[in-house]
Length: 133
Image (cartoon, rainbow, N blue to C red; front, side, top):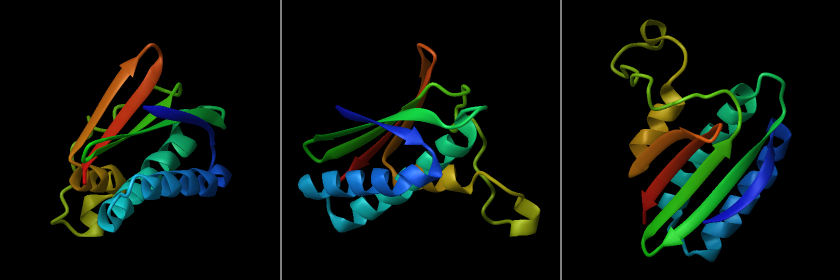
């Protein structure tokens, strides 16, 4: 997996997005999968930028890997331990008022990726998204 380090702050997102979009293009990622991956990228990056560090900004390592027809995107930060997969999925049959705030972003990521894993290891949050293309 090829890693690159970014500052986890909103102003850095255009650079992160351009990097990932260029990488996906180099690896001939189909447009639909590329769009799903970039939407997931934005959701995860913004969450890290806004919530991982008590005194922002912090750093985030972003790993990309293409193995056959599988693309993996790995986010690593040393912020507050947080497992986004532990939260129960929102009930999307409820109205916005009944459902409350939060949880839709990671729900969308889980629905559009083929696999999403989380671990906290050596003081780091490690979230890996897998997409079959």
